[in-house]
Image 1 (cartoon, one colour):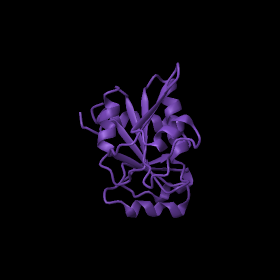
Image 2 (cartoon, one colour):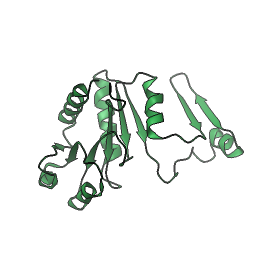
Image 3 (cartoon, helix red, strand yellow):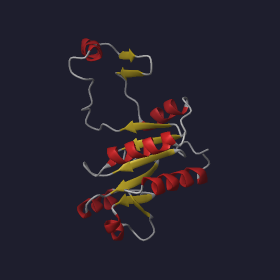
Length: 172
């Protein structure tokens, strides 16, 4: 299996709908019994634990990690740099069926470019490697290059089936 064969990334400008689309896909796949995980790129280091929370106090005090455990889940915040490939390996150890990536537009994984408005199509020219597909509202389909599939970002069922077919073809 290709080291990134069950990894599907979503790239696009801010407010292009990446988070919303991934959340809808995660929900769809969960209902189908498909286990998914999400890696979000925070290029500017803005993400922090909630200010004033116990875990943020530990991190701010210098803890290398803080873990919050509840009966249903846990959250771990670690002060440790990891690249995308390392995070994918970590999630693979947990045996997820699909790993979604938000951002990392220059990664080596399969990426779907999101364009919610015509001006956002410029992202297609910013990439060294073309995306495997373009997703957006149907009225923007003409903006996708002829050799790249266009997917309706509002048809979650069809998009999910396309992703499953793509990952199956890649050996997942």
